[in-house]
Image (cartoon, rainbow, N blue to C red):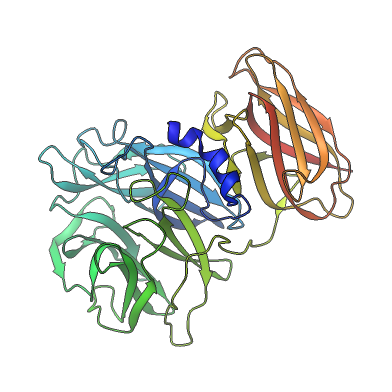
Amino acid sequence: MKRLLSLGLLLASIGQAVADNPIIQTIYTADPAPYVYNDTIWLFADHDEDAASSFFLMKEWRLYSSTDVANWQDWGTVASLSSTFKWATDRAWAPQTIERNGVFYMYCPVQISSGAMAIGVATSKSITGPYVDALGKALVSNNNIDPTVFIDDDGQAYMYWANPGLYYVKLNKDMISYSGSIVSASKPNGLVEAPWLHKRNGKYYLSYASNGIPESISYSMSTSPIGPWTGKGGTIMAAAGGSFTNHQGIIDYKNQSLFFYHDGSLPGGGGYHRSICIEDFKYGSDGSIPTIKMTTTGSAQIGSLNAYVQTSATTIAFSSGVKTEKYSEGFMHVTKTNANGAYIKVKGVDFGSAGASLLSVRVASSSGGGKLIASLGSKTGTVISTCNVPSTGGTQKWETVNCSVTGAKGKNDLYWTFSGDFGFAWWRFTAS
């Protein structure tokens, strides 16, 4: 915990606060599994615990969402070793989630009592969970990891996984069982782990972590979802970023192709403290994927964020110092507002031509209250509103505070800064 408490000060001191990669700063996240559903990107991830030192320490799976690729809302823990897979003993590793017939299926590698790795599946009727163990045991348990699940146009679902081999099964329509035997597939050149299967314009792509330690990301193409994976391919991302592993997810969203990966670039980061990043790219005319470099700027925002819609305070483009946790009204909220240098950046907030006249915020404070300051352009930019946060009588006793607004027009980056220690649940502007 000490490592993360110092995160805000370190971010400010190294000048990384203006960047939008990594996209999550409140905790360490890894192994991104993006999924597009209802015009939203839902990002499933695992969580590198701060206490890890000489090996991975991972106990839960987290969920984030975005409609503009820039600002990410925190939905908290959607599954865990302790609450979901009670037969598992350790290692909440790289997940992937997919929907079929109104049910969401989350495939998760875990360690079992024998010491081997196995893949479990949990289900939910809501993408935000909670996810419940579907089988009470592993779906497959041949000591492999990193499931990727894909449903082809003909309705046949496939699950691949890897390390050290590459395997797949044909999933049944119930998505929690499979037909036939586990197939040992021919590995594309350099494959180590982290397979990701997707289809675009009739072409099948298998991307994967490659070439040992440190890992790069490579891919191969095929005319079939079961290979052979010997077609066009190459290196997508070279080994870099301060983490000896990498793990990718590739999607198209609102006419933009997006490449998710992880690195070790947050303060205190490294091989066991990783962070998810995102880059946009363009496929070649022949369907090839170009070489993609890691950046601190990340992907361009798609559109803007509406200032006049109630927005979770955990919707963040970049932040320093603050943390998130679940609050009594059912969702995640921002805490640790009194951390040294704490702030939140919300990218591309559109106030329109008329501008805003009122700001409403949902806050809670056990004692003392404080101030919530909204600025444009930077954390020391033009102040458009200062909200006095009262003592509400408890950290889970919430009140809505209304504050006057001046000078908020057009599209701007919105910054929240804080004085005092209080909870911050949501915000909403009212137009003039």
